[in-house]
Image (cartoon, rainbow, N blue to C red; front, side, top):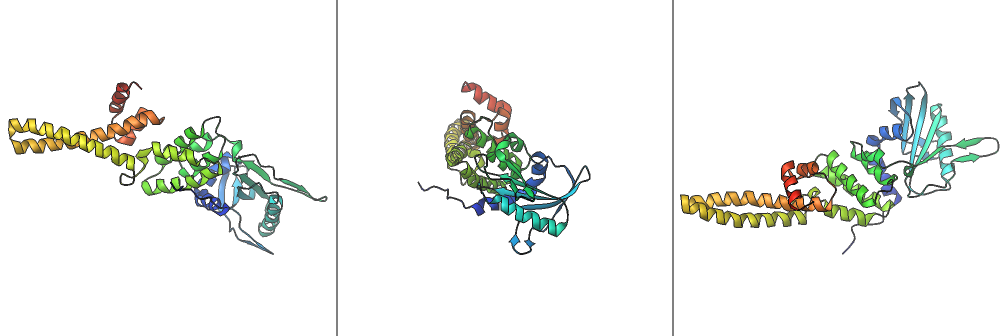
Length: 310
């Protein structure tokens, strides 16, 4: 079977970060940098002096203490020994352009703590920037967000000794809960498929997606279609039997109609029952979550759980 994964380039990771940054940056600034703005103004990202540089994020900040400064963020995948010089270039150009204090942060996305220098002593002067790794923070900091753009960053954080399988399952569930419509959900899952390669967790994500079949469109989800077909077949057989019995009492035509209606209803119920069984045995969703996802009642899910001895 051909893998759906292709080795992404650094630019693909950058693209995902930039697509989600505007929605995620307020939380990143407060939670990771401990900066609390009362005013944040986006600055042009083209710095042209003797060379052109495009920062990942550039803001003019006024914090709650009245400090005004330029905030510069870079997201870095590679542990680059030349990063100190790049940040130095940025610092000089930003200071020249805005004549304000400069605060610079590199947010490292790699799987290990970075070793690149964050301070440079030239003899007469010292330059430094803040180097932070997502691995320094708990995944819960991002998972509990109501924005899918922030939830994606949970993948890069510390898993707190939890298994990758559990983390990914929680992430997919939270992305589902915080998006509206299948297109938005599929967009963030596509981005997640790229980001998991930073942690080499492609097989884990595929297993999660196989288990969480309720997330796929009916026409694209083989498991759901199989359950739906099985439910319809069972319902049709039940309908035939009920129809014949009813036909004996009220007439053959009326019996067929009533039987078919009952059969279709039974079919839907059996299809949902099959999905609920799989969700109970293969995921960590609560009874209430499963009821919401399958459009059934808590008591119906609880009854199935009791029957299976779960």
